[in-house]
Structures are given as structure tokens and as C-alpha cells.
Image 1 (tube, rainbow, N blue to C red):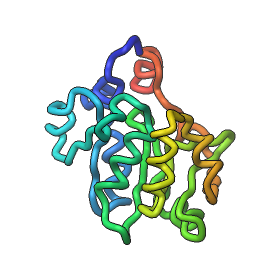
Image 2 (tube, rainbow, N blue to C red):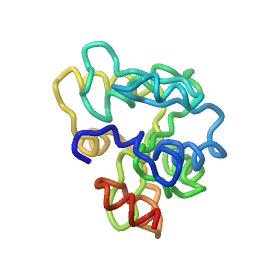
Image 3 (cartoon, rainbow, N blue to C red):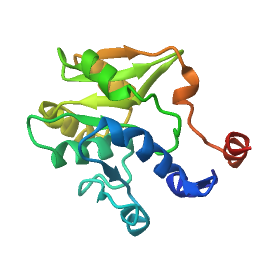
Image 4 (cartoon, rainbow, N blue to C red):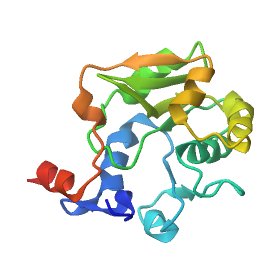
Length: 173
């Protein structure tokens, strides 16, 4: 979207991230937003905002996942979803947990893999931090390197991310 903060782009009268929050709120006890810019705008949505860990600023989705893992207790799970997917399945968390429980990690798959739609256990803090400190940034590559499950979904449209202003207009229109 030309370098703009996608999560704050309007879909109807609300930012994209608000649509994602609405889909995830019934599925999670606590919602937090991972952001590396416009922190005040995200905080205005009423949820704690997590910045990228020190030394990993702007290091991509895995940095946000690591920040999330550090924000939760050892007996919790971290559910992740990108800010530009406003049609998430309403059973995303439940199905990811079923797939993740034996491994500590699962991601979604419909027609293709969706590694940023994931559920992670805090025991992955160390392996994820080591991966990032080594300079690696590929989400799917790291997830495949760990024991993991896959939650399968039939609806690829539920995972479609909006990357262009025309995508927003088409969905809203």
C-alpha cells in the first residue's frame, strides 16, 4: 500500500486492525497489538501495544511474535494474525490449538500456508530469539524448522490479506 501503515487504513469507517480485533476478541482472553510505528494510534484502540524487542526493530513478523511471547505467562498461548486480514475464521484459535497442543506451534493452511496466522507456546521464546539473532527473518522457514502442527481450513478467502487500496475498495464496495 505504498508504505502506509496497513493496519490503520480504513475499511468502511474503521481501520483494518479494528476488523481483525473484532474477529479475534471472542477467541482470546487478552488482545495485544504488535506494532513498530504509530504506536499511539494503535493504543487508541484500547489494547496494549507491543513494540518490537530492542535490537530487532522492524525485523518483521517474527519480532512481533517474540514480543508477544515475552508478554504472556508460561502457561498461555500466543495467537497471531496480521492486521490486514479482516475476514479471519471465527474458530481460528480453537483449530490452531488443536493442531498446536502436541507441538507448541501451529499455523493455518487453506489453499496455501499462512504462517502469520499461528498459535505459539512460550517455550519457543529461546528458539525464536536465536533464529532472529542469527539474522533470519523467514516466518515459514522458522516454523518448519520447529515441531509444528497445521490447522487446515477450506476457505482461502478468510486468509486473504489486503495489500492494495483497490483491495480495500473492492471489499468495502
